[in-house]
Amino acid sequence: MKQVKQFIPEFTKKEPEKPVEPEKTGISTYEELVAFAENVKNDYDKYGSADVYLENNLLAPDDSAWVLGIGTADNPFNGTFDGRGYGIVGLNVSIDDLGGLFGCIGENGLVKDIAVIDCDFTKNSEYAGGIAAVNNGTIDHCLSGINQGNYVRINDKNGNRINIGEYNSYIKGTYSGGVAATNNGTITGTRNGAFVNGSECGGLVYENAGTIYGCANNGPVGKDSVNTKLCGGLVCRNSGTISCCYNSGKPTGSSGGYSILGMAAAFNESENISNVFCNSINDIPASGDGSTVDLSKTVTVISNEEMLDASFTAKLNDVTDDTVQWEQKVVNNTYLNSKYPVILGNFLKNRTITLNNGIALKGLMHQSMNVYYNPIKKGSDDYALFSKAAPNGISTIYNAAYDDGKGTFIPAEFWCSGVTISVPVESNDVKLAVMGTDGAVQVIKPDSIRDGKASFSAAAPVSFAVIKTTSSGAKTPDSNNNRSSSAADSNTVSTGDSTAITFALAVLAFSAAMIFLAKRKKNRE
Image 1: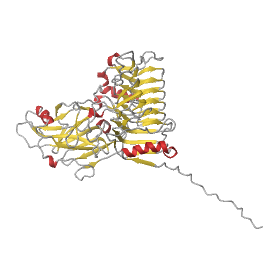
Image 2: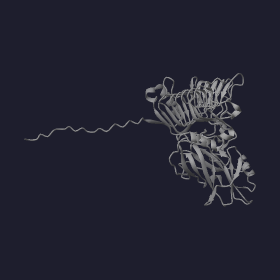
Image 3: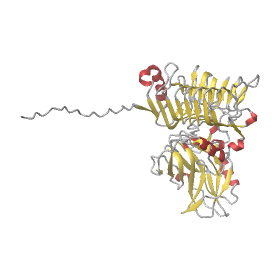
Image 4: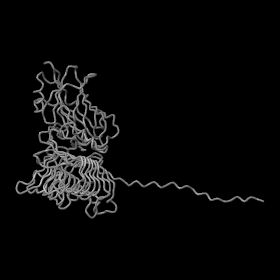
């Protein structure tokens, strides 16, 4: 009997379809940022969940007005806004209701790795935030403002003095927060240095019903308000979770009338508070009068001296997981963030920058950070300062400057985390004079002298001099032959870029801004 071959159909195994990657849009100018905010409002279906990223630092024109935050209460931003370690500098917020770079971040929205610096509210918003008015999503590893005094000595690449105090952010609203006015979502690894003012205000958040983790406030809160009634160092009103955070900023009430102050929260009704540390400034309590949950036994209050000690930074790292890494940089009288702990950025890389005058820098820096070293001219104020520290005279003396290669200055606390600087020397018997962050000159011994170069460490690029140990001396180098070049210039070599470090902010030496703009002074607390 003939055997009939049974027909068995073959089924082709179908490979699972790969998810379509959302299209990402780069933003490279302030005008494109304005256009994106308008697109989110006018074409929400297309742009409301868009993925965008910054291609470089954005500098707002001095006469501009930011009149539309990204996302509204009805149409919140639910996409991803990736700052990639860059900053937005010089926003002039003029919005009645939801004031901030973002009006409202939705539940699926993510804003990360961005610094908003020199952000001034020219109009009193109802809800004001340094990053967002309302956050229902995630704000991660961002920096809002800086808190620098006018004594900090920084120059641009042409030797012109930059007054960093001009770049302090000024947040102003009825209900204000340094990062967000209202937080129903999550804020992680983010630091505020902005001045925050309002009838009710908090260093990080006005009203928190969400989660705040691994964050810090270093800015004064309520200092310039005339009607502050409720003021908290970290948050004003808290019903959510706060953990692994610290506050060094001082809450201040109005000059007349009764104000409720709290170093952690002005009004607290949550028990979900852990590993929170506050400065013992003026004996202000951890939580204000009327709080339903007292924080006096939950929040650790320490002195300012303890907060500036390296052991405090170690304590923060002990209680925080690997997603947030704290660092304190105090080297040879140079320091970041007034010596308070900063959060290490995701976009800092190990780099070596070699300049055409033989000076080299090595350390953690943003990939776009450009460094310039030009000789300081005799007769200048800085030359006179160095001369006082060098009784036998000066061999070489250099002014430090750094920017993004396009003239926009970004403070070192967001773009740098310590450098080793090496400079050519004529002998092994030399000392160095380093200009500290406080403007004072300090004489130090080099860390090492090898192969005709002396090396020393600093928190960021600093001005320095090689001083003579005898009365005989060498000439000051010719300024025409010692220009620091951009990455595209063959005279500048950048090597050793490695994997990005786990972020930990601002961010942060972002501090802020550009070719020098004349702005009003905002005196430090």
